[in-house]
Length: 228
Image (cartoon, rainbow, N blue to C red; front, side, top):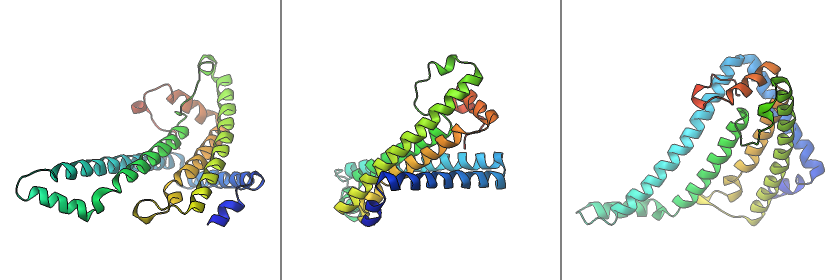
């Protein structure tokens, strides 16, 4: 795996391959939308995004609550409760893996949330001038900025690739014996997905882009749904 990271880190090799990866993601999306139908595909993507983020957040909360609960119960002097909690802590490896797991979950949640936001054009942005423009020029500005954002994500994806290669070279092992580069691979995957989504938005149909821009002005709870 180290050889793969090293051989693909050169800009002359990485960017053409990355552009090919983004093109494949866009093609798969187009084929899926054509086969399943636009509305059905959009609903499926929104559901998958919702369940993924919910699962990550709930998992992080449950692990944190388990850590707090067992630590507190192990100090209780009531008959049977303290020893039982201490036995559970020893059984779970002393819970030394909890803090690293929580840090990685925060990373995965943050990157996943960023990828979801880019698909809905709800990413962090400075849009003072764009909000003052008529819908036509505003869409043109949006296409240009999203295309630039796709290029920036490509550059960040290469930086993430280099980082993963260095982690693989160090041979670091994270929690549960999983290599560190695998635990942080969401950085590269996230930037690749964001680049693909930005590229899609840059060349989206006029009606769809207009709907997304209109949705961006409304609360999330009122969205009707063209975001995949």
